[in-house]
Length: 277
Ligand code: ZN
Ligand code: FE
Ligand code: FE
Ligand code: ZN
Image (cartoon, rainbow, N blue to C red; front, side, top):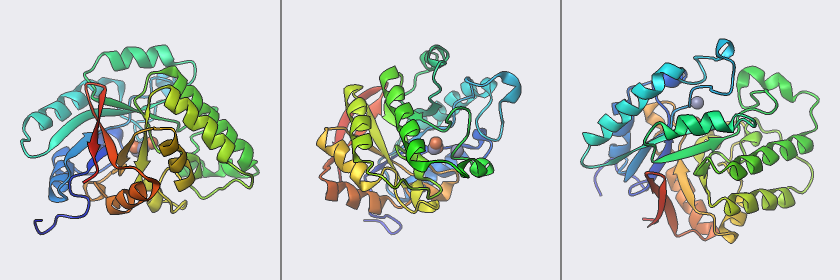
């Protein structure tokens, strides 16, 4: 193993952003360089899709790339991939699920040769609950009820059939607000819908860098995924080159503990399985 290689060697990072979203830093080539340095097998770019679900006037260029940038994003990632022999670069997108806008999303996704589509719930009834700017929205909320609403959106997202992977499946825990009741029945219902949609879930290390201090999803959720045969991909949710492949040793250990021996890979929206290194 080369100096600089890590226990992340041989893994794939399927959740990486670019500067186009307005809140990430560094050049795309630097993200690839970091992935190469860590010995990753693949890096998949998944920048935030334009906010197709919002009226044009209120779209926020600090949260997602603009409508006009999607073509350039795709071209840039494809060119980057074509120039790399030693590491595979995949073209993904992180797409918000917004009920009622499925048709608009479908039209956007059909326009580009994505390898895979991450599905994310970042909004609950228009509230950007994972945005630190709107953290005051948690005040006075019944957190158990909030978890119910959040996971119901994840179930509807799965049922839409538009996505390949559930990104950060329990993002609702991001700021450390935890329910009091037993969430296992809610997890089971959710995972059943994910399995029925033949989707994978993302095991995302960004939760370790947030007040939740825990990988997304929680170990109990992941164990249910394994039980239902739901495949996994790994993601750092890097918004700077340094975070590519971050804490992947911890994820690999968690996956093995739960029972996983393979991770999913995607090409042209077709899934295959690769043994864990
Ligand atoms: Zn982001
Ligand atoms: Fe996200
Ligand atoms: Fe992301
Ligand atoms: Zn994300």
